Amino acid sequence: MGALEICLVGLAVVIVSILLLRLHAFLGLLLGAFVVSVLTPGVGTEAMGQVAAGFGEGCRKIGILIALAAIIGQCLLVSGAAERIVRGLLSFFGVKRAPLAFLGSGFVLGIPVFFDTVFYLMLPIVRAFARANPKVYLLALLSVVAGASMAHSLVPPTPGPLLVAARLEVSLGVLIPAGLMLGLVTISVGYAYAHWANGRFGITYREIDAPEIESFEKKELPGLGWSLLPILLPLGLISLGTFVKMKGDVPDWLVTLSDKNVALALGAGMAMILASRFCELKKVVHEALSSGGVIILITAAGAAFGAVLKDTGIGGELSGMVGDGGGVLLLAFGLTALVRFAQGSATVAMITAVAIVAPMVLEADLGFHRVYVALAIGCGSKPLPWMNDSGFWIVSKMSGMDETETLKTFSVMLSLMGVVGFAVVWLASALIPLS
Image (cartoon, rainbow, N blue to C red; front, side, top):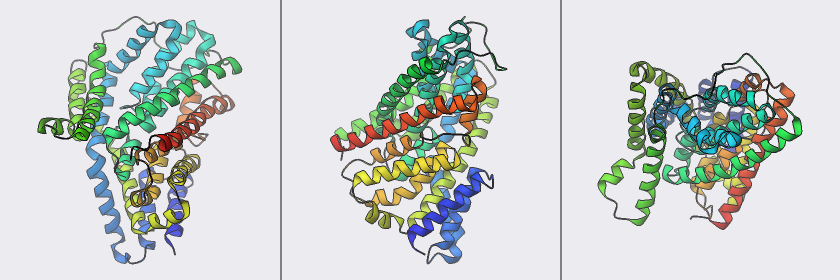
């Protein structure tokens, strides 16, 4: 059996395990990795050892980062810092331009916080605004979705981009600013579609059984600067460190501070200081690590899947089939979109796709920086969300829209952002190769 056939069998095992057998993504990826390792010539009885080695390497690269990011996200929520960011942007933009505030808030909070959590957090504020402005309910709602969903797939330290960066050996200091810039383009496209859909479909505010807030009156919340610091500090340090290293002769203290683990630890420390003023810190950290531990297991299993695929020689075989760098980008985008459509999860789609394309990318002379492949994978995780996506049902049930309305608003908007984002990546790889 050739490398491509083994790869297809492994991909089928992952999708069938998650979609049909309803196994947890961790188990599906681990089972796929084991099957690939068993089928790889020359591995034999060492199959499980190969899987374990890949799993351990994945934990080494991203385990601490995901745990620290989970702490930052949870502390921002319980301290009120996340709400302060939303209210701060609302104050800046004003009530008339509140959907822009929701777009920006969703994007900022989507960097350290999972999409569904951002949506739950911001929904009461959106509904309180829409109760007084029912005709722009859909615009406000989709603005949150557009911002949070793109940050979730493009900007570390969310798990998908973290593992993609690790597998493609792309510095976070390069991926973070690139993801932010592309994210601004894609959320602008999403916002434009949300404007059009709001006027076209006439979906207005609906009363449903959902948490509400009484008004926009300020509660006791941390300051806006302190609220943003746990997010901006690590992102700034990592990006600054990468930029300064390009200039050469970097002070040792800056090398240390800009290390991704140290930078995230500083951000987590700031977030914990905020949270300690409002709640029991030990409980908050425990909850954060409980949720983060599950994500670490999934991403490490994805790393194991990628490691055993590399041993099959799939990289060389795909290089001969795909050809130039543009073909690699198209493969990365298309494969991610296919897996997303098949099993629903954007993060699992990114983890699975990068496992297949990484061996080829690391061996090939692309003619452009590998960050473009990472961004293509991030954009590929957006198209074609439908009923097998948990995010689809969260948006549908919590917004009051039926399935048809959700498909023509939520699903179309995410697909449009993903496709336009990929077109921008394709064009930028040709005009600004960065190689």
